[in-house]
Image: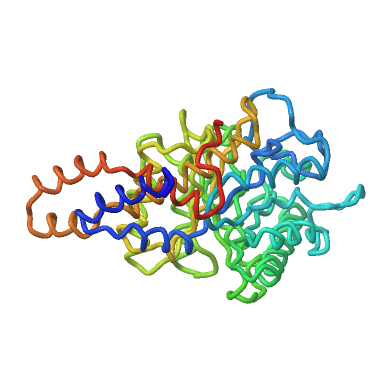
Length: 404
């Protein structure tokens, strides 16, 4: 018996004392995919133009070398990063990562044929795909408005982009055999004091209705809407706020809500919001990120908020109703390894949450024994989670450490 097996047997005994079956947890982990975003690899510039300038309040900071110069380099780096993340994965692509074969193909003209490389890439690895329309970094988003623009021609351009992206999402789901979530985020908003906050939201509602008018196969695809508190250039007003999308999703049932950990006030917790939606039978999409200073999109680590998010999903019994995706990009460190670090951290936090003795904790709480509840929460911090993580990596043919 090797070191990993010996350590795992020790851990198994420790967790059994708290009523936790580590073998069962490792089995259950294989049913929960983490959606790894494609844009950490190249700072979200995509394939339209490898020298494109990001707009819409988005910026990747840092000048670390090694950014891919073409699609071959890009897919090579992404593939290498994914090999370092154990367990079930999906890949989240953005619309700007199309294979245009050197031709100018505008956003309202993209088709499934431009994304066959992604399907081939995912199939080779037995992974599913998620998708994201790119409503930014374009001349028709330069004034800060897309789907809520006062210009009907601009709105129609982006509506058509959204429609085509939904069809690509359905294509991804059909071809990979895994549900594809097409996540819509727009940068729309005003930099300064805003008088008419209602009209842009009414236009956004009409635009979304038009995008979602076409019925697609919900067995293959689903849409989500991602809110934001404010952005660079939209500090005073964002059309697609958390409240707006919550109401839209609840009222129309045409999409599910996406919450990004960096898109709220610094003292707000995404974890604290999850149960409110689960209580009403809703599904959720999450973008797990690390906001060191609000929406700074640092690489995910096993910090308090990431742990709280995973704990809440597990404690709500919502592993099938909450879809977990990542969203960060840091150009100050090696991009591929950053992708792996963030993916592994999300998986680590999820594994730790699933290994917690939820039943014991709930019993203490239901009995009103809050002293025992607190004592247990402190005790379980010292359990050998790392030994179970090592076995998880071993069973998935993944390196235990990426530092050696």
